[in-house]
Amino acid sequence: MKKAVVEDHEASYPDPIAVEAGQVIRPTGAKDNWDGYEWLWAEGPDGKSGWIPDTIVECRYGKTYAMRRYSAVELTCRKGEVLLTIEEIDGWAWCRSDGGRQGWVPLRKLISLEGGEGAQPFSA
Image 1 (cartoon, rainbow, N blue to C red):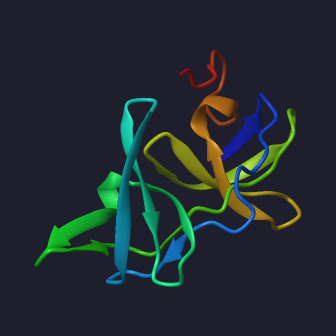
Image 2: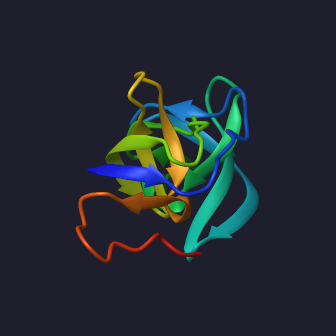
């Protein structure tokens, strides 16, 4: 689905956490509520840290595991840019630009171009 950027977005972290399904991660205890979703600050097996949605982790046998592949890379984009949305999770959309760059953009900064007349921007 194509979406237009309604507000500039700058990537927050230059080299954030990325994990594969089944890898052990270490939540630090820091949590944040983003538009009604809980996010955890965690460290991956390579020592990189970042925010991960609590919906992708599972705790068992005293350890926390990633249930799916995930990268916290954000996409820097500008108002008016059109992006292809590949996936949406917990208030964010994984997008690809016309130039092939990919990363997460907050849904509140995007508006659907395929919703027809009356399409509304996402709100906080």
